[in-house]
Length: 169
Image 1 (tube, rainbow, N blue to C red):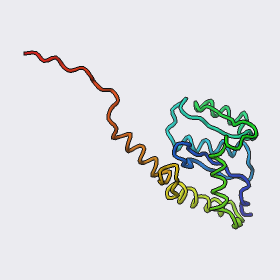
Image 2 (image 1 turned 60 degrees about the vertical axis):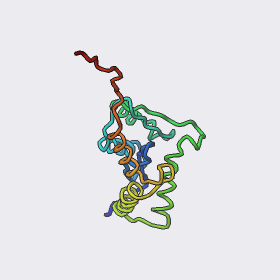
Image 3 (image 1 turned 90 degrees about the vertical axis):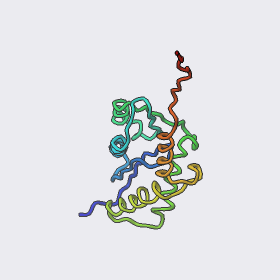
Image 4 (image 1 turned 30 degrees about the vertical axis):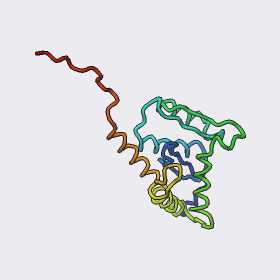
């Protein structure tokens, strides 16, 4: 029997570059789905404890003990939006709108593999690598990150020696 089309999609998006760093589908939108996505995100990025915030809405899958414990162990601060504030989770809502309108609207998926392929082609093959975004200076998320890290690598060191050496004869 073929694996049915997924009912849940979880994604983690970098707020700095707007890159989708991890995504996963499942037959159920539950804590295990969110946890699997988090594990993928942690494996794909170097995470320095205390330097990362995981923001989500008030859904039970995001406030579960499983997820909050894993965030704690990874040194990731948990952030939950305020109730009824649509702007608080705008970055995630924007991603869902893009996926719905540019990837899945008008399509029917009979298997999870079929849906995953479409999502892979959209997220990894288009959104992250080729979809330019105004807020990123008309660059794609990957181009924006590459530009940022290139600029960081060529930046002058911040420690400057302002003392002149003493000249002796």
